[in-house]
Image (tube, rainbow, N blue to C red):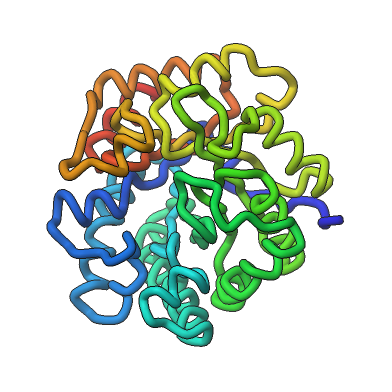
Amino acid sequence: MCPATIELPHLGASIALTDGGLETTLVFLEGIDLPCFAAFPLLLDATGRDRLDSYFQRYLEIAERHGLSFVLDTPTWRANPDWGERLGYSRAALSELNRRAVAQAQALRAAYVGRGMTVLVNGVVGPRGDGYRPDLMMTPVEAADYHSDQIIAFRDAGADMISAVTMNYPQEAVGIACAAMGAGLPSVISFTVETDGRLPSGESLAEAIEIVDDETDGAPAYFMINCAHPSHFEGVLAEAGNWGHRLGGVRANASAKSHAELDAATELDPGDSADLARRYRAIRDSFGQIKVLGGCCGTDHRHIAAICEACL
């Protein structure tokens, strides 16, 4: 059983922004090679760190301009043991990089906080396997053990919260939520869905959220949806029951393509930013508690600016 959740200051705001598609921006728009789609190795040298700072500053400036809070992610979606091993990093090296990622985010936010912004450093936890496929499935106990090193590194470095992003089956999310609370950190669980609005493992969004809440006594601060176009889950939200109030954020893809189509794509599909912004506004009109707004694959600062304008 997990301890009670910890309050997060950005949830008292009208809207809190976060960034867009980090990896797709770096690869397709900036021409940076990211083996295994991993951004965390950029932390190892000054050029890479400057690229990451430049990327996040665009979004921080949008939030500051509109007087909004910001959830500042670490570039650590791939910084777990399996992906780290593929890239040649030991567990000890990964822990150091996860701590360094938090320190980098803390340094970046300092000027904005000094000017009165609320900026939370968010340790990003990615799936053990592929984000689009529920491979390497674990029990909740196995998942808690697997992800604990990364979560402890975030805690020790002073992160404000963690988010499990692109979760594609509920058991891994359960384990992460309990590992986070065991470490004393608030958690957010973000599920991805297919074009039919269901998780890649087959559960409905309602079932996934209810499983996590039931098995953790409601430990996550809130849930999110990411790495899917709004057209893939708008119908599910229209029929949302009591679980709908647990949704606190959306990070949608720019493209309406399926995961399989995106996996095979060799060019970026930026979608229609104005249409995406209108869809976000419609979601917010129906679910006012959805406050954390950002993007995922194919989105950049221009999409987030459009979303911000539409929702304000």
